[in-house]
Image (cartoon, rainbow, N blue to C red; front, side, top):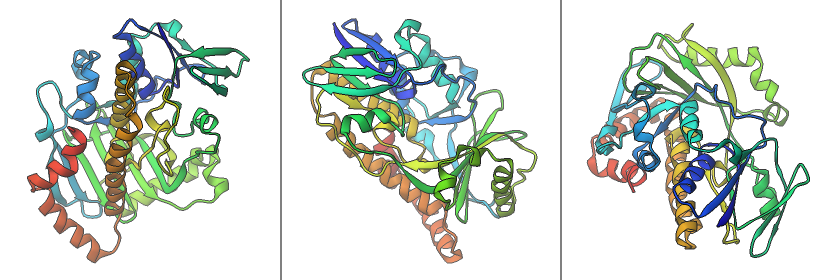
Length: 377
């Protein structure tokens, strides 16, 4: 029986563990540095059909219907005037039982945890050293040493394990942006609403059938190093207030007194794709690569990568990093392009962008290439 260590208890690591449960030839353990998994996060995530297909393989299609939502369109608005620019019918990429889905991140985590025996997860542990020969020997923060046939690293964008394995600093870079996220009330909307403004954008979408809505805004912001690395700075009430006011002043949409549970985070992205030369070590999720959030593919790509790592191990092949590099290049290019276009501030550039958006969102050829190659391929 093959022994596999999974580092990190996020979406990618938990999905990978669920895939292992479908076979009886693997013995796995998940190592999590936190004392417990936070299941109180009510913030939303979007899952395109590429990941829904994979989730259905482990029973996601049986999830309680009122805990998820199936938006049919992405509506683009000018943030200042709230006039509609155009729309994309994302339901065109759906098929039977595989539909673009929004939900709370905590609901997905609970689903992924449901089938995993409690004894398979060990908390309060971090990897301190990795020895590699034919097998992988891990040294942990409690001084324990264990040996495995495979190591799957899914401990997030600030993966210490990845830096240890590659023997270099692979820290991400600040993307000169801040995310402001929370919930929004008193909204009547069945679609994904995307508001474009100068140097910012925000998105509102339902996360279930209970009229609960997610709010996320990405705001361009240059910060000093002492601010970027200070978590208390992002929790500061005055800083949060300044971010909200900045949005309020740039949009005619009435957001005052509607935003709840607001938190802010610095936006980090990966500097470059990093291969691993060891055939039995796999980086997945944000530990492999983290994108700008403007293409809403973070969770879906985490699931895709986890599935590809599983297939690689199960089929004893060695093309994982080559395949992932190609897909990541496509997603990263679209994410950066969206970020740039969403935040235009020059009036002439905005007029040109809006004109082009109207044309492209009505082009079947463009949508199949820009979205279809990511959502379905």
